[in-house]
Amino acid sequence: MKKAYEKPVIFKLKTGFMNKFGGGAYFRKVRGDIDGVPVEELVEKFGSPLFVFSEKKLRNKFREIKNAFTLRYPNVEFSWSYKTNYLDAICCILHQEGETAEVVSEFEYEKARRLGIPGSKIIFNGPYKPLDALRIAVSEGARINVDHFEEISDLEQVADELGKKIKVGIRLNMDTGIQPQWSRFGFNLENGQAWDAVKRIASGGKLELNGLHCHIGTFILDPKAYETEVKKMVEFAYRVEDEFGFKIEYLDIGGGFPSKNRLRGVYLPPDVAVPSIEEFADRVCTALLQSLRPGDYPKLILESGRAIVDEAGYLITTVHAAKRMPDGRRAYVLDAGVNVLFTAFWYHFNVEIDRDVQGPTEPCVLYGPLCMNIDVVDDMVYLPPLPRGTRLILSPVGAYNVTQWMQFIRYRPAVVLIGENGNVELIREAENLEDIVRRERLPERLKLQ
Ligand SMILES: *Cc1c(COP(=O)(O)O)cnc(C)c1O
Image 1 (cartoon, rainbow, N blue to C red):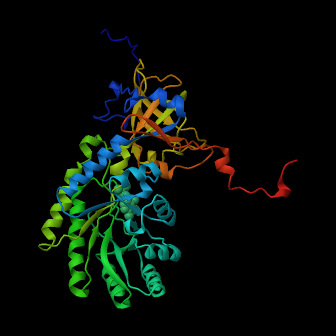
Image 2 (image 1 turned 135 degrees about the horizontal axis):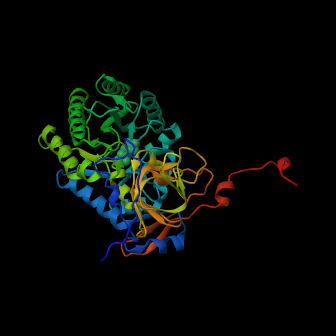
Image 3 (image 1 turned 45 degrees about the vertical axis):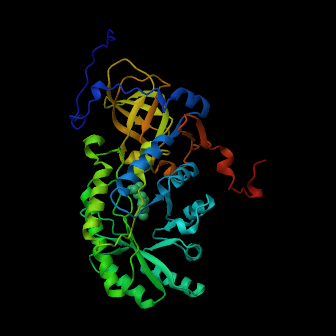
């Protein structure tokens, strides 16, 4: 086929714009469908912007990650990190796959219970667990990972009230070589604080320590950090068992595995920069099997969030206008911005367009619809001249966006799920005025007319 003529253009080069992986000059990533459903059909039916989740991708990704660990270690539990994506439909798919629920607030706890998850299948984490929430969690048999000394006292109070001993885990923070170190959650291992917490629990005599928890960070690109984490946890567990006679039944190593997203400032493409889940599983399970005593297989708990759901999510957004910036860059105004794409602050999404557009590619900025200077979806993406109405398909956006999105000047858009059979189902309606004003109360005396 004869290639279409493209008129030559001259760009002013700016340092910092290009890198050898840019490949922008050949940008022609066209995507007409998601899982076989035409993008245009989705928009016609549900509007733009639109979040689209692929059930097939979600289940496959979960199974891939689950297999990587269960093939290497005999006692594994996956617990779904609600804050990564707590849409009912997404949670239920992962619960169907066998995940328990990992929650970090009363709201998330209630949401999991409402879906039918029993307390005994909930892990309650986080630095802020009000006394009432602890009472409910304890009486319903949830696993609780303690964050600080005050929480130890609170749980002792609950133990008194219920007249029984309560099993608890503690959250640790430690140096695994990852910078910045997440030291604000739990008890520090290296400075002896974690040991003090165990002593405190033992001396109170009302709680029984049965687990250790840690979550070293998020989007961790170095599998070795997990090896360090696991070795330190096992060593600590045995010190605790030997000294205090507690039995550590589970080691919860948290989440943090990366998705195939492109972190800003990381210039290698995700296929090169992001290690495979097998590499992570291998580090974790080898470290476990090497450091555990013979015949001892405490439960390994994983709270992986973004690695499971991120790549199952897409956002369809539409070009509303094109502009030329004073510095020469082309810019587009889209109908979705950082209000619905909170993770745009950290990642360069994969940008695909719904049609083949002729013309030279050039560096472009993607602006959202907000009246805020920070509303930039991407400040550096190579695109051909897009006509108004072009649909952009951004991915992966399945993690943290539909929980951290904000209702600032606009309604939040609809979310749909493409089932494994190709059927499209609405899993969250687009918001309207009634959703927003329902909680407001206008004093009679202020009413107009
Ligand atoms: C957020 C969070 C997770 C999930 O983290 P990902 O990086 O998305 O895998 C797991 N555990 C805890 C305690 C968390 O706060």
